[in-house]
Image (cartoon, rainbow, N blue to C red; front, side, top):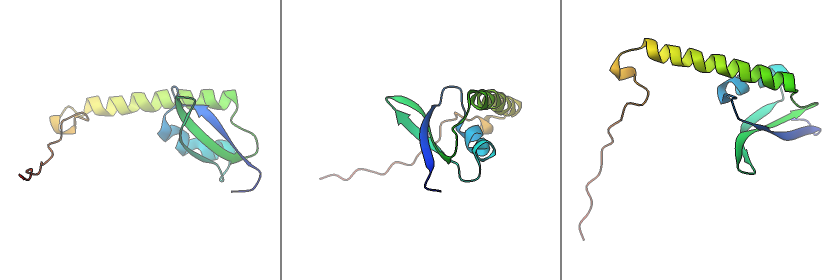
Length: 101
């Protein structure tokens, strides 16, 4: 990362983490880094990259791609009607016996 890299907060409302992480280098170059971040109680992303920050149009593109990604993920889940592929299926966890004193 170059010394002139700047960091800034991008609110995460309607932006998928997977979409942002897979597209950040396309928008800001190969040195761009994004990670989850909370700023003043709002969840979002901390973007660190040299040069100019994301534009409103780029953020709108990310929101559109995120919506499409979520719709595709939902379609994949609904097409897998088998119970074993249900994403919110409870998972049994083995519990250890407690020691008696």
